[in-house]
Length: 145
Image 1: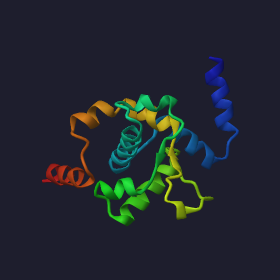
Image 2 (image 1 turned 30 degrees about the vertical axis):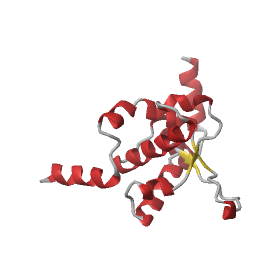
Image 3 (image 1 turned 180 degrees about the vertical axis):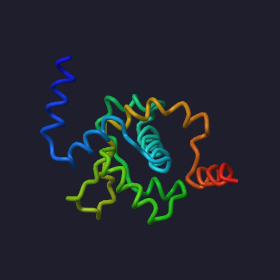
């Protein structure tokens, strides 16, 4: 009971914008596009460290990501930029703005909350053969017919 009352007090003391961000971090209200992109970003981190499931990232301090992951999976440059920005806005990843990009290193990171969220969606993602963005759009179009 104390934790619920305490959370209520914290939320009620925050400006409206911060409440929305706090709420999103607890539940990640993703569109289907954002959900697919988030899972691909987590998958890229797992490929980089040799993990099998999102919670394998729990002790990995290097959960780097980059918008190039999305373009390599079929998003256009503009679609990827919008989706990546939306994921950042929802607290799923952190875009590093103070960096020297000349060395080619990836400096953006996925959040701890994101790979915890991804764990509960991982089996579905794998069962669907980790669909590309193009496959995702084809599935949507076939459902609308």
